[in-house]
Image (cartoon, rainbow, N blue to C red; front, side, top):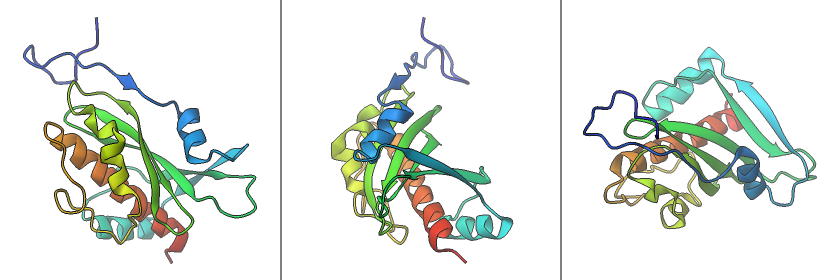
Length: 175
């Protein structure tokens, strides 16, 4: 029997964890020509965390972030972050790949854990983030089109991409 959603009642349908990509597959998708993907854990100083929170407009839960990159590349192939944001009840795990110029190249949903709203996994939705940067507003129904029946998942994904972009911008260009 599938697991029940945390805090659910009998009226809430069972959720099924849908795994679309493993960490390895997601990183291979982000860096297809790379034979060795490295990871760096960045601990955010109090000042950097405060700056990020000011730019986001909300509080960060984490005080560190793991950033992935091609360790055998002569020139930068960009960076990737694997993030999680809460949809309605459960976290959505996804990867954000940012090019050397700081613009989104790819967003991939890795694991979806809600009974509805998995449409955010579709390329039709995720390609809306391509070309967006830390300075892009990313407003739902203006910059990112909502998906009927998946509003909370759209909000979670949009917030997660924005957070990833701002954190990477601060890590790479912050003072």
